[in-house]
Length: 136
Image (tube, rainbow, N blue to C red):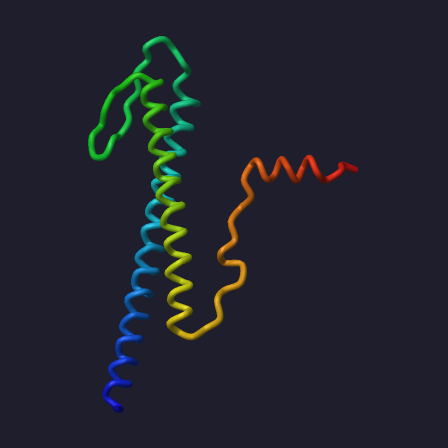
């Protein structure tokens, strides 16, 4: 009987380790995506600020590992699309990370983190609150 409980403990420890490793991997992915998001934001700002909207003006941008010259408008559109995709990926990873942290705390028989699963209010919810609360 002792071997089955020992095997169960080993399995719980292995699962805890797997979940912990995945949490750390997600954290590194989030750091890399945040770095990409900041670089994309800087690129958008540089194109907007340093290259005024002239008819047919082309700018150089990096797409993956290629350097391309394309019209300013198309470059901005591509950069903004990339920024939106990065934001979506970050949101997905953060949601997954919250689930994994909760799973790890369950495996460790610790109480769930309070407030860790909170979500921000949407614009519609904020405007509804603003309309309901009297201004002083």
